[in-house]
Length: 280
Image (cartoon, rainbow, N blue to C red):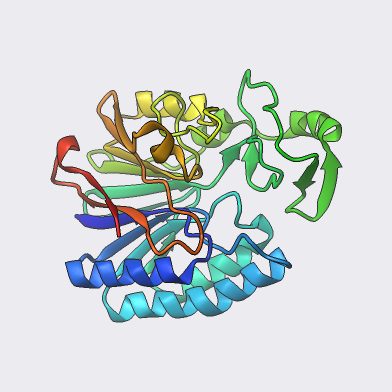
């Protein structure tokens, strides 16, 4: 199976169009999108993301179908959870599109399993956030914390108490669906694992999940695909690593409005050394 993997498009239509052309020109029939699909720089984020889902993505998914391309996708922490219903409805409208957030889909002996949740990262928008056993509250970049699907605001001190009632990453991972025995498992987790050089921010802080690392160590999965931290590859020079036989990929992304896009083309019949990161 050959597929294109990219993440963190943040509503950039140029990048979406570029991926479609790459798939068409390469005769690649699967596109995997690892979260943060919707516009981020918005005056009215709820309304603008809703319009993007119901208009642009609806048309884009139709264009993929015309070219016999299937799309396997999840949303990310910058894609508002309050719009999950709208996104699900558009995905279900197209039989070539599969939202795998906490679900699975199989193509032959390949099973994809997804998760959009991220850790209590230092960013102000706390949508899709979980905490982790033993993880103290990270330093916060914003004095204002947005919670309840970004409809309410808290101070950092208020967030310290609020976060104690949030579900743990360990529990979320435990509840994920299992693949059929014998299938190659590919996880699509927006949050990268901790400690593999795939989770490093501009200030060198690591925001990966130790629970995801532990999960992958025990999983015997073929591959895991991640996103979330655009600049990690440019900071560490690492976009792929291996964890007890599981190939872990975090392609990162150029910033919005850049004419470049980072992506990888994966062939599940090739080995670790035959995977390449492209900038196009």
